[in-house]
Every structure is written in C-alpha cells, then in structure tokens.
Image (cartoon, rainbow, N blue to C red; front, side, top):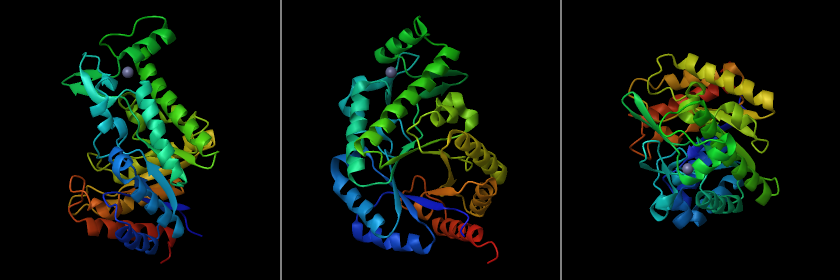
Length: 339
Ligand SMILES: [Zn+2]
C-alpha cells in the first residue's frame, strides 16, 4: 500500500490539450494521481474552454482534479494579473495609510459577485475540488511601520457594526487583527458554501495558508479555516526555499501542525512541497521535505509546480529537470521504502 493516498501537482502556462496529454501521461508514469489547474482571470476571459478540456482529459486518465482561483483580484497566491482591478478601481483595498492598494477588498460585494461567476465556470468544468489558495488581506512594510488593509467604506462599516466604535486609523490593534481574520473567514465561508450549493455538494473545498507563525501577516489562522463546515481539506505550504536552513524540521513541524488541526476539525490535511525556485546544488532538499511530510503522517502531498517550474522563468529552478527527478525519486522512496 502506498504511503501517500494522494500525490498531486500544479499545472499552468500551457493551454494546448495535445501537449497537456503528453504531460499527463508522464505524470501518471511518475506516480501522480491528482492535478491542480490554475484558472486565472485571463483564463476566465479567454480560455475557459481550454481549461475545461484539460479537466476532462485529466479525469479520462483517472486523475482527481482541483482548480485554483490563481491570483484573482490579487488576493490569492499566483503569478497572474487582474483585469477585475482594472475595471473596478473602487474595489481596491484602502490601506491604513489611506493609500489604495491593488488587491480587491474581500468585503466588497462586487468582488464577491465576481468570485461567484468564477466559481460557476469552475464547477461547470467537472472538477473534484476548488482550492482556495492563500487568501489574504494586504499588509505592507515600511521600515518598522506597517500599512494594513482594509479601511474601505465596506470594511469600516462592518468593523463599526461588530465593535460599536470607529475602526482604528493607523494602529493595528487586536481588534483589527481579529477583524482581518474574520473577514477572510467570512469570505471563504461564503465562497465555499456557494461551491457546495451550485454543485449539489459534489465539489469539495480545500484551502491553504502559509505558516502558522505568520497569523497576523497572513490574516487568517488555520484554526479559523478549520472552523468552516464547508471546507473539506486544509493545507500548509511551509515555503522553506527562502530562508529556512533546516528543511526537514520546518516541513515536519508544519505537517504535524496541519495534521493536528485538521484531524481535530474532521478535515483532511494536505502538504504543499516546494517544487520550483531551487538553486543549483540544493535540489536534494526536496526529498527531505517529502520525508518530513510522510513522517508526520500527512497522506496527501502536492507539488508546486510541474517539472521544477520550468514553464515560468520567474519561479523556475536553476536545473528544473534535476529538481523533478529528485521529487519523483523522493516520492517513490516513500511509496516503496525497501526499493
Ligand atoms: Zn475593504
């Protein structure tokens, strides 16, 4: 029996079905059984049909398929631009320094409606799950000072109703931290409930945040996401490429944490392995992270992204082929420990 029940990888930057099927066959050979498609604003505008064809092809080959609102409104993770922000300048977040910030406000009804149109298209493709990818409100550092979002009229009104006082102007006190957390939670709750409603409970919801120690920076906590009934799977992306010397420890700690929170709430935990951005000579770290997730007992492992990120130069590894080889061997070593 394989150790990981689910081994997935994110796929982007190609909308040509013929080439995708070639990659799909390779993924299957490499031991993957799940795939995540990014579905950006550009895709929604111009390539919905292509993505739908790819989702169908994945299912034909037996893959479980997730879909990702990649950088929509610039409030989710992802390397993609936002047409919504161009068309709706009043829906941008307003930071505590009174400057507009190019990321949609999660409390703005225009953005929530736009997200539902995206969800309509995503669910129509026949995906198995929607992956809410690192949703957050803005925070900017200026030396020792920070500017936080959001103080737009919708947020100020919502804050005042909950706290019976005006929203702080600059200081990010505990009431602001709580408000930001509640905002992300209410947004994900509404979106995940909508997905369940329009799919008649057939499509699952999955959400990931980055690290637990960054609760304030990242707005939401894993515990708050675990408290959403409509969320089925909770994930972590330990993000160790930039700055963590002990890859195994960082990965293991994150994996244990997400497992405990998920199990406590009746959710399935999953772990994101960094699959891109490797410098030459560091490729072997991938195996350490895979082993850490396995040792922690997480059974769903996802790689971001396919082939060491070679399809996107801004995130590519120095030697993407070497990275991919290390990942595939690392996964096979876990699945077949005696081989
Ligand atoms: Zn706002």
